[in-house]
Length: 266
Image: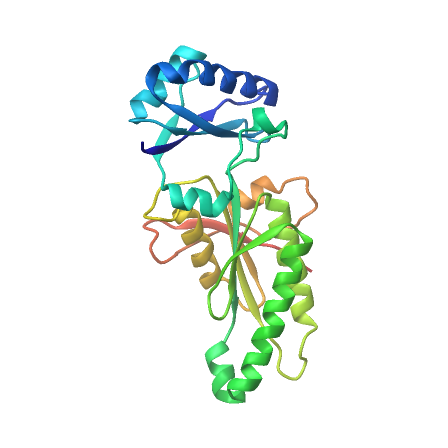
């Protein structure tokens, strides 16, 4: 059966217990419709809940919710099974494990070692690769320290994801602070872009739009800068981070200017 993910905008006052009870109600009704609810996630900060379900159609998934508890999803999209399992690993039902559900809301971070091609031409392959290894080690250390996960190496940078905005911002801060004190004779400069969002279906990539935004913000960032979407800034309120003024920036592939700001990592 096709795999679907839905989103419920429950708002303030939503609790993990209430979402768990709704999920149990879904399990009690799903057999009637030939559906199978595999797992769910709940983000208490945003009041959003997400369900992952095997069903013949989105309409069937909606009917299960309607009969079980009446909380019909605000949005439901088809998702690629391979992408889901690659991103989350082995899925477990929180009602069976007793552990609180994670949220599919992710923060995506890209790094780019500025001028890597020019460095290679100027220093030679071996010296340039040494600097790239320094770059990679600094970033991977920061990911480990702040619970980030490396998604892939891009040649002269790394793409990573985090469950929390604060983790991504703390990692970006650590990276820039360490990079600043590295190789004083041939300074490494790194640009970082960060965005946050919910899962979307775009080819085989569950987080296509969010990934694209983080990548384009990296391209737009200046030397040694961390450029973030305003969603990241708003989610970081009260968490001890400082940001510059919000600007509207033109990004390749985005028809309208995107509002973004710079993290004051110093």
